Length: 208
Image (cartoon, rainbow, N blue to C red; front, side, top):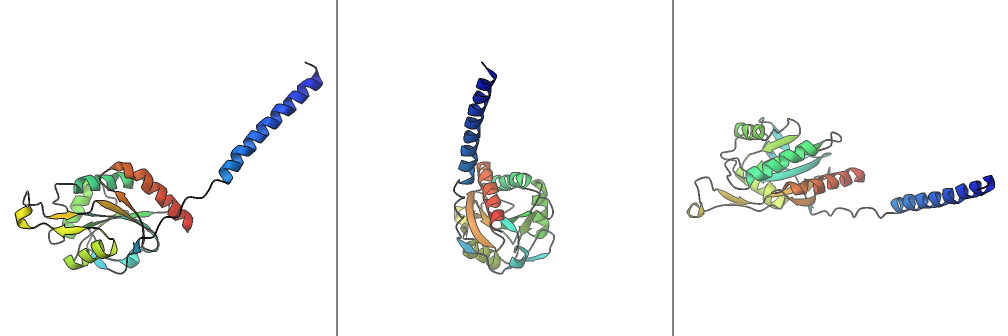
């Protein structure tokens, strides 16, 4: 092929490649934005103790994304599974901006700060990342049921399969935005929820 012919060939194929690249870039740029996460409610003020005996309130959650669950340490059912999911979520969280994990006990009479601290250590809870909360039962019930909209009920003694079969409660993980608004619920009994939580966290970070 002559030199002019080669130049034309290069120009043609160069143009084809440029058009193809433009289409790819345009398709990515014009891709519709992710659907905004819904707002299911908001957490108002509360006052509970963490695993180190420090008082925690709703103000401590403001400005941070939080993932909250409901467990109790004597639970032989789904609680260890949910806590294992939280542990794996902790390992997958981005280093920045920080995300707080919070576990609220439904058995505060037994789950003192000391008991919760030992429970957290079993699952590799990192200080400053994963917090465990306990306090007056009515305050716990209000936060869990009225604020976070999680089910929680004591089992009557006659219905308990074992002495520590104390309660029936939700195993969902609750995602809160930096304004302490509820933005998502996820199934805590499977680690399959982790990619969806991480994607939702990225979306909340983009809202700021």
